[in-house]
Amino acid sequence: DDTVAHQLELYLLMSLQTCRATALSLEMFETDVQPVIDEYLTGLIREKDMLMDARPWANYWSDYRPMVQFCKHAQLPVVAANAPRRFVGAAGRRGPGALQEEWPSRAAGWLPPLPLPQPSAEYLTHLFHDAAFLSEASREQLGISLGAVGGSLLGRDAGAVQASTGGGLPAGKGSGEASGGGGGCPYIGFLRPG
Image 1 (tube, rainbow, N blue to C red):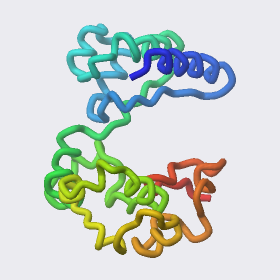
Image 2 (cartoon, rainbow, N blue to C red):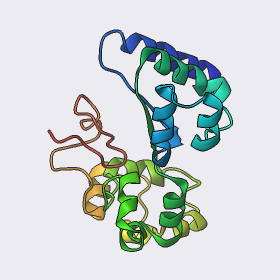
Image 3 (cartoon, helix red, strand yellow):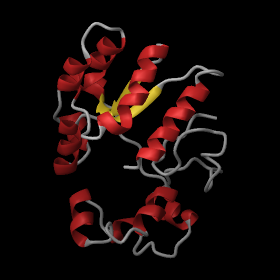
Image 4 (spheres, rainbow, N blue to C red):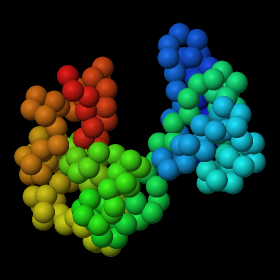
């Protein structure tokens, strides 16, 4: 992590909140600790108690605390944005279907809407250019074979990847268009309805 980058994030947060509704979304906090974060922000519990229950990353004090404190002072929401580790681990070990098939329905509140969308063509292209992903062990862990997505994707364009994977992007949405003004994240297939 880069402390200077986190200071810049704090500056941006402070600037944004002066001109629009703002919230701080932190991957560091898992969704199941949202009530704990809210209790801290409203002054119901001490920071020490929040940290004990919220499982923050080791660099909370140096990199994230200033932003959380600013939000508390300015009465801005802090969103616990990451899926709980136990669900991520289960999906990694048994596949994403395990979250729907094996988990009690009350767990759904801690997860994004299921089933998870297929990765977009841009994301797959990006992923297959990563040497670490190309190792057989990492593909096996994720349950992906290069053959399952039409052979080696290196050097292929997003359209070819989209055709070989069955999509991930709506018709007419190409590289960059999904993120340019439309919102969402084209890499993982989350697009705002437009």
